[in-house]
Length: 541
Image (tube, rainbow, N blue to C red; front, side, top):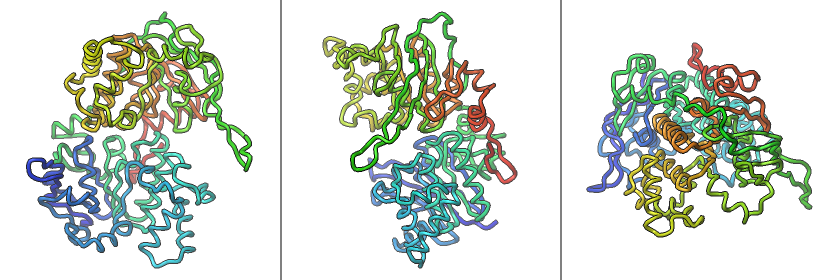
């Protein structure tokens, strides 16, 4: 097999002198024509930096290469002229980025964005570009989007946005596709569809692929060879089967064993009800016309009833847009809703904001993106202290400081860290800070909205273990919202499955996961736990 991409002794540093940070150190690997190589490792290991070096997209002169060679079809790309690199990008080499909504221009229609790639590299007319856009959207399974070509990126779901990104990357039939965590934020069913799509297209075009991910389940079904990265180094590489069946390096063994597992501690059968919702409805009006008349409703939550008891976790699963997060926000009165909501036996649905405020400390929420929910202008101590000040807890500064110290210790952070700011922490540490902010108020009920979705497997396992320990220690009631069914299985006593605002199945976690009754639940479980590869390495549901 001929080498399409050859990387030799690649090093990447940020800054110089005493402040230099060595992100990648002496990395070497290659990709043959038609081959998929997976680059795996935890956040900060140097995976994306290595890929961006191939595309020459690092922020120079902040980033520089002390050593290394990157050759594409025998041509050296290190130090190549900008004009030549622009010819290669999007034409011979294309890249799919991790977060499609931040990669797509929010002000341009999808038609214009995909056509732009074609018009830059091909000598074609706008009409020909338009026809190719329709062809590409059909290729990636977005036939319905051909009727919405003037729509903006935010008008599509996460899975649809990622398909638009794939269509853009494939526009000029690249020889090398770099996919940087392309399915991290997608639901399990959408993830399986996108992976199957990429596998089919690769086979059809005989395209090479560099697949960057921290999800080893995906690697096993997609990659021919695997390179394992840790702290800027490739610590092990080889055929996929060999890496999974006979790993040699301790770090590879750690990654393979890092998946969240186990189950929550037993919940008392006679535990009192903490949060109860009966026939909860959240309908958003659809307004059209000059007079903005209501012509219909989006039924985000449509008649859901739940009962979460003390010391119990209710897992809420379903695809994006099923209403999971809306239900969680409605229960703690962050979203207007209809139906009965009872907290510790008290009806809170009809309470005014002033009456509701004293109860806020007992009902907390931990959001999906800790970096977005933590103020970058406040230190960690100030972030955790904010709730104490709002609710008049802790009395003096010294007393509040003691409470903050205790909350940080409970989430396995050092109290000395409270003088630092959110950007100085890893993703897992930021999520621990968000949990500490909720815990410091001694709540009875916590909504955990996708708290592990953006974290590495090993960090997910740590957060799951932390949540289980805290629940046992404080008799907490959790609502755990997630599309990651492996994590839900590790924390939940009961599970409800949502689809298009309605509950399609509910019951004990083991029953719903191992013996689902409804076809939709069966499809979800199959996508999460039974993804296998066929002869071409394509994921099947």
